[in-house]
Structures are given as structure tokens and as C-alpha cells.
Length: 278
Ligand SMILES: [Zn+2]
Image (tube, rainbow, N blue to C red; front, side):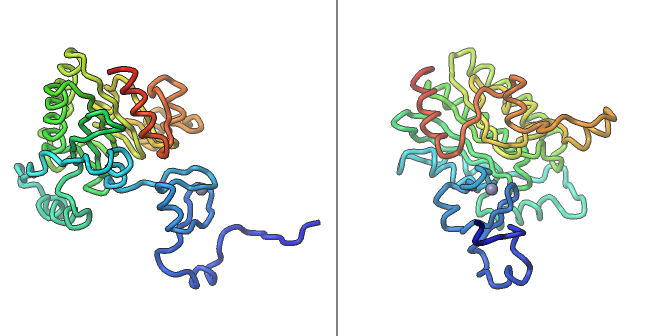
């Protein structure tokens, strides 16, 4: 016997009005309404469908590094507007807005620290900072991180989240693809271990360079990973795209990704890989 029926799982507008602001979040994948403090406890992963919400880079720093070991590096390198770029809004103003919004001064932060006692260099990209775009500063901080990992003979781990190159910096942004790739090639020749973690979304120039150059490539469940977006590809080839196209699971099946690792076990998985390979 069914005692209670609920025809529509989604909350109606009238019910929504009774919810205190900021305490409840709707899962975009399964539409369940989630209690924010509980969602925070599960590292922003839906307990019903395991949907991984996009999160701030501070969470990865906290999640991956042993407490008290993280030390930020290269934070004093800041972007300048070399091209005097303006498209609706000045690039300098966009930078100011992004800094205010995120509380950080670029789309990547780099740390030296430890993962379960293993000394590592960690980079974490921030999609909220101008779409995690790879400009001259992102490229430079990553290149210096790679060189430091090589000098110290320790692994380099990079949490990727990006919409691609930073068009406001034109060719200088595109140059970062070649620069970071060249630094990684030297690191690899010297026997260095590099592990990128592809999170939602990792697209454009990042997948065309350091996103895909790892010794072991990890991804979070359901992450969008690709170069051009699905709409552009569909228009270009004039065909429907397969189900799950450009999602982490699809890339694993095609061999572009080595493992899909849930956020909760990312640290233990990383430390196992480091133990095995370094
Ligand atoms: Zn869900």
C-alpha cells in the first residue's frame, strides 16, 4: 500500500519561497533539493546521484594537501594588458572584477606541500576567474611549478578547470600552450611524474596542452572535457553526437583518460599513484 505519493519531485514556486536563501541547492543532474551544509560536508558531491558540483580552488587545496603543509608560490606574478584590449569591457577592468569576485589574483594558484607525506607541487585552476582562461600568468606560474618540481625531483599535480586560452591576451595566451608543453617535455625526460586532474569543464587550449600530457590522467565523474564545444562540432560535421560525448566516462572508454576518481577518494588515489610511480 502506498501511504504517501509525490507526483512531482521538484519543489513548486510557492514552496521555494519558504526556503531560506542559500541553505538549499537543487542538483542540476537529479533535481533533488540538497541541504547546503550537508553538501559542503560531502565536498559538494550530490549524495543521490554523485553529481560533482563545480567548486572553488580552496576546496582542492584543503582536500588534497596535508593540513598546514601548503605554501603558495608565484602569487606575485600578475597580468598586464599588453594589447590594450577592449571588447565591450576593458581587459584591465575584467581583471579587477575577477579579482574582486574570487578573492584571488589569477586563474591558477600554485603550492608546494604534501599529500599523505609525499612532497609535491600542486596547481589548482579557478574557472570563476575569467573562465579559468590560460593567459600569460597562468602559463608562467605553471611553467615555474614544473621547473621547481624538476629541481626538487618531486611530482607535479595540476587540477584543471578552464574554458581555454585567454583571448584578451591574443597570441601571448596561445604561446602558453607551447611553453607549458615544452617545460613538461623536459620534466618528463628528467623522469618527473606529472598528474593532471581534469574537472568540469576542461576545454580549449588546456586540453590541447598540459591537460592531456600527464603520465597518468585523472578526471572527476561527469566532467566535460574537450577542445571545441559539442555545439560547434555538431554544426561542423552536420551529424548528431553520441550520448555522453565529451564527458569523462566517454573519454575513459576511448582511452584519453586513465581513471575517473570521485572527489572523496582523490587524495588517497593520488598518494597511491605517487607511491607506485615515484
Ligand atoms: Zn543529484
